[in-house]
Length: 404
Ligand SMILES: [Fe+2]
Image 1 (cartoon, protein in one colour):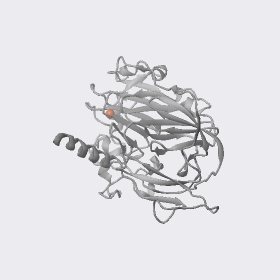
Image 2: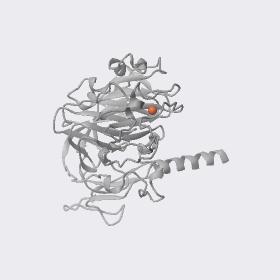
Image 3: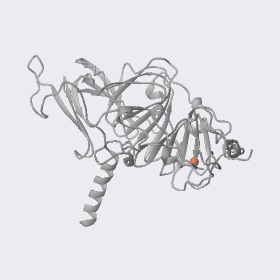
Image 4: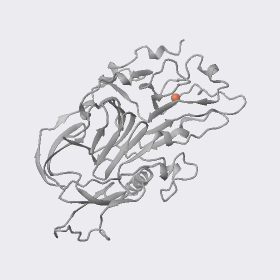
């Protein structure tokens, strides 16, 4: 019994650690929850509590024009399970991310390249906006990093405009559409079994960002411009659960919300608003941490001044990060520690063997005052496996790249 209670308390603490957002409200809501809230014609709005962790963690209450439950038809589900190549996991890899083939359709464009039981790292180059369907990743939180492209993330919570360098955090269960302004779009997506949130150490017990946090509430963009579509007909939502997509046809438009309030909603944060922490000698990757989850962290490497000890070496040291696989996604600028790096490339340095700067990079870094590099790092706590898609865009001899 004691160990059972211990497990429950441990789980609750874990959840508390990972979920912590800020209150937001938008549109029309009644003065109390769970009371009558009527339209001008006298009929009731349809209240929906959107809750997490068995009613024990953050939630929001949404008011729909029509019930969100009216299903007209479900088409045959289809698999989107990544084809995983489970051999040769212990090897440094480099992937040419921009060689992923663009696709007109957003869902078809999502190509998982590195996966484990906690997360999927996905590359996508969608050419067209989602106009004739909606998407709901019902079991995994999503982080979408916008490398190229501009547009609007439309959700039942309202709209969020996005552009180059934005992280979009989309909690599981959020029905959304991505609308792009152009056809040249490049996205780095992480799907996560556990919630994605900001690092706990940067928040006080009430969720407020602390003074030493590299960003604060003013940098977090919440949904605005609530568009209420009081429409009935047939609305197709592709719902993803456990590597399958279920095509659901609903009677009511999913964005028929007149108002909502709560702590659970999608938001945007620009990598360009991450304020780097610097020191006299080289500081390790946790100072770049931007998001946390149970199975990985996400870090932002942004333009910054280099270490200022008179004998400092700005390039990182060789290191064995024995409990993490390190994935670095190169966004822009010059990557001081690596040779032959282009935007859109990913390097994968697995736990178990050391990695470090390329030849000449250490000497080259000495005396330099600043870097313009921009990169996103994903460090996972369980080994990542390459997918068939990843093998197709691999620089095969990368593991020898430290020789010259
Ligand atoms: Fe590293």
